[in-house]
Length: 255
View 1: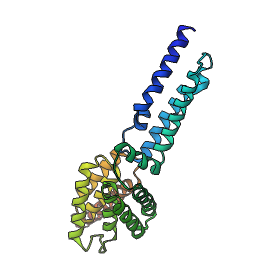
View 2: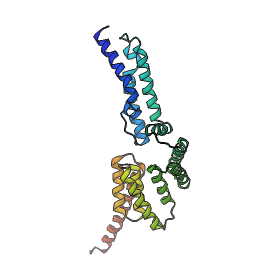
View 3: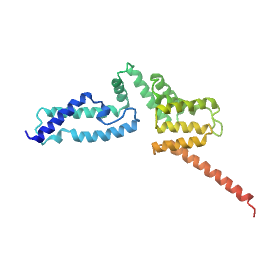
């Protein structure tokens, strides 16, 4: 056996042995708690790299003997890790296995399913339906701050507003902002959460604060559609106001 082949077989055995102590997150180089879109993007990128490295065809120039089975098992584990982490339901169940939490898995999955439905409804403007789904999610997994944030935010959206968009129940709106702000201390740098806070702040008349929050959201995610839309509307109102005063000054300007 050549030294090169022996080195390859040694690498295979080491990798196979490490799998027993390596989580799917570590295997694909991911941190837990990331947003679904980020997990899917990063997991897929890392999976492709590992799949090329550990596909059995890559070792065709070497006589692997029994180690060929180890390569196949390594590849299968990488594939499973990708499938689990990119599927929200499977990932939720896997996270419970990692923590060893004595939690009703069916409740966790019910919460996750309701949350996904709520997100879709929120995107289409079905605020009442979204609020109901987020309520189900929160009730089935009360420890999840993301569920809670969506639940109270959609509550704000359902508060009756006047013609200027100011919530009639201002006290409750202020309570909601305070709770979202508290959640943001735990869920840091979440563009969607910053956007939620911006919407509530704007409704409360705290325009500068709202604008700042929308800009922060865009910094974390330049593709945040809602934050971009809100900033564009703010700019339109500013320009309209400037135009009005410019016209007024022209009228009172001495000839």
